[in-house]
Length: 482
Image 1 (tube, helix red, strand yellow):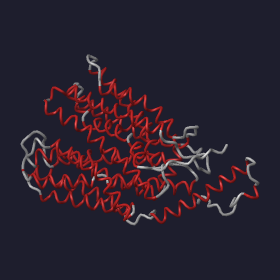
Image 2 (image 1 turned 60 degrees about the horizontal axis):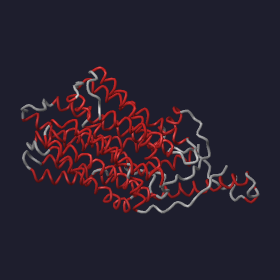
Image 3 (image 1 turned 180 degrees about the vertical axis):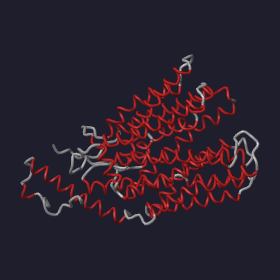
Image 4 (image 1 turned 90 degrees about the vertical axis):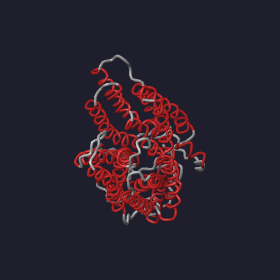
């Protein structure tokens, strides 16, 4: 049966702000999980570093497995309310229950019981967020088929995510001033904010937006493994995945070493958390700036410009010596304003690649592509931590101890050169990317022609128009390439 196509309301500022508001609770939940919950459970709850490290590592691996599966299944879902909405609606109760369980752990449960409790709920939390975040990001890429409009949509999403980071970081920044005895209250307050932010975002996405009808020449019956293999053999997909990996590697290296660099090398122990927050505050303004640049240069050139900017900022840190407060402030603000340029444009490019994939395979694969994008982001951040800390140890650096001049200079060099390395290779992989605005316009033209032909076939087969009068059927409609 042919789906009824309704006129989609224009993507005004208010509508895009409403849709992207779901990015706030996503950020407000995932940042504490990566930064604050591990030390909370290891120290305050007494589980130890080894146990907590294993639980959080395996839960992230579980997340990496869930994302592509949810992406593929949401691509293949067909309901009266769409493909993405049912997954988001089903994932939210699991997210709420898991956030409550993880951010408000029970007392007097014992170390072994608490370990099993944390592991079970972390696995549930990541499954729930895969069900919410992966369809949400895929849907964001489907709100518009226009090249620059997609960059605008991703700007709203990235600003919402950056705002979620800033707002949730304010909580520990304030409570840390009151002393370490407020650890339970700090974690509970972050969980409360994440749940409160979830309500308006969920209402907006589920009740104010309709999904576009699916246009596909295939029912997508391939196995999950075959679907992954099809995507991972695409040169365009591999280049964007690799670029995103190195973007997140550079960002992860900087994040992992930031506090050590500011407090130990720069000799500013009271400024570590505040400068980290300052960077994210200016990161909120980064999206609109890079969107304007993207309008002029196109997406892949804007990625390159952003990555070169990041390289120059990081290399400039080699010129900043201990105690030089104002140069550090200036570079932190510059880093915030350059932050997310690669993430923003690469996400918009994924939507264009989804069009290219649909033209050549006939399959709707936005969910799968965005889920793989999430996996490469996590892998880049994980690789950064996995390389940063062993490298610090190799230089002889010891947190909380008096360090030699060689160890401190090794920290400074790693903090500057590690991110620069990641951003360099990210730019290199996107150099001369073929799917630019002109190529995407040709892709969309071919897709629209084929979709029109498929729609005419459906009407003709339903007896709505004579088959002989259906224009372009069997002749001019573009066919998927082999």
